[in-house]
Amino acid sequence: MKLIDARKDHYRKLAHDEGYRSRSSYKLKQINKSYRVIGSGFSVLDLGCAPGGWTQVASKLVGNKGKVMGVDLSYVEDIPRAQLIRGDVENDDIVGEVQSYFGGKINAVICDLSPHVTGNWSVDHAKQISLNYAAVKILEQVLANKGNALFKVFDGEYTQEFYQYVKKKFTKVKMTKPLASRKPSSELYCVCLGYHG
Ligand SMILES: C[S@@+](CC[C@H](N)C(=O)[O-])C[C@H]1O[C@@H](n2cnc3c(N)ncnc32)[C@H](O)[C@@H]1O
Image (cartoon, rainbow, N blue to C red; front, side, top):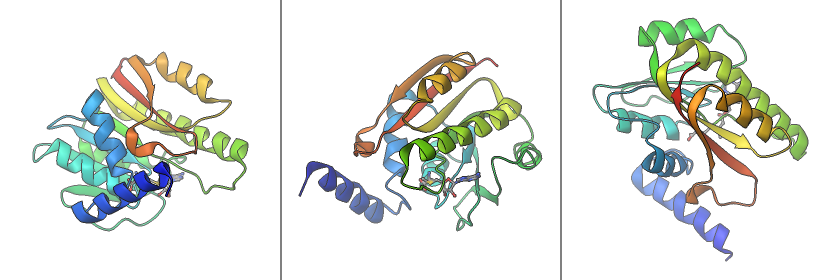
């Protein structure tokens, strides 16, 4: 078995054993350990949350005093202490729902958005980046000053442009690839700390 497949299997088994809905849960856990995008007591918006692995991790990280809302086009089964809604990040209508749930500005926005992939990387990359721009549009209306964000990025020709775009809005921006994501596909994570608009 290749090392990559062995790792995939390892995280799949771990997710099953520990009750997480996705292997991706470990990507968020690893990133958060290094960068503390989410802290205890935070209000967190999870965009593109189905089946809910990141929402589960976020709910644990924020604890009893925090709040988490997950949004996805697809239905997501209940997660303790999380609010889940069906919605499209490309439609501004969800902003009202987000604002009324949190009742004020929030501390972090996490986005693991992926389009339906076609297999043509340039097409999939362009669509995935455009979902991230839609997420930034939402973020601008809900994130508090000094808040944090995390974006999955399908790496390609528009990655630099997106990186430069968010760099203007945050004090610190870093591209990273957690161990749980070491697969051949060019998937990166953009960590954004200290929002200043
Ligand atoms: C890789 S999955 C997220 C996995 C999740 N972080 C987890 O750990 O369970 C990407 C999600 O993005 C969602 N998505 C894609 N386009 C969307 C859109 N326009 N609005 C909301 N969600 C979208 C998909 O439905 C899919 O569930």
